[in-house]
Length: 72
Image (cartoon, rainbow, N blue to C red; front, side):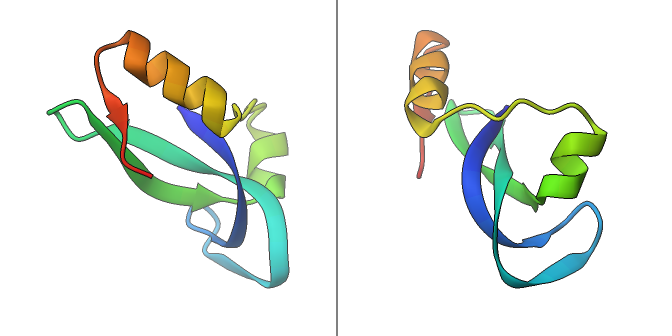
């Protein structure tokens, strides 16, 4: 699940930005219901892969509906 975030780098492309960019973070379940940031992605990766990042509130609601919690 991708959550909207401001990022300074993109893990997928190994790119560091000169200034913060509107991107996203990939959230993953650690197996115990705790969803944590696994990686950062930049705007070009989001566009190229058709990703639709969710707001923090929507991510939290989705995660809690699955019985988990957001660690951020």
